[in-house]
Length: 181
Image (cartoon, one colour):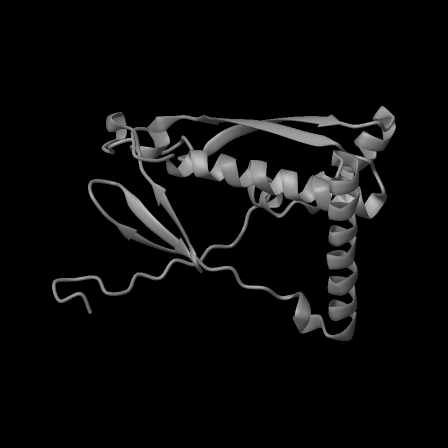
């Protein structure tokens, strides 16, 4: 089987997923609502063990931030989430728009001023002050087709949306205090 055949099969699968989702949502608005869950438990130092359904991952910090450098840190995981969501969204939208796409390479850089995290300057954000993505698409299409694809991805990538727009977050403290209640 050639790479082209494999890519064509994958594109057909993605188009099928899109069509099935479109049909399900057309039948019931509630079919469009999905809840994703993750849970984490602190371990040694600042190491965190995360569970997302049947998947497990580890998050840590380098020694300079109190960790053992056993895994990527939280902001690296955030960049990894953005990269992987870009890849998924490029694949889905290439299939949907009929844009031939052989390969995708994405790199991300984020600027973070540690004064915000450490509370050294309350005027400095604790999160990224800027993120840069570099996306390399390869395939036989004209540059205009890939520009069209990029516009679709920029509009529809969920994790890019999380980075680009404020998302309401509600934090509820439970089990705090001497008795853990």
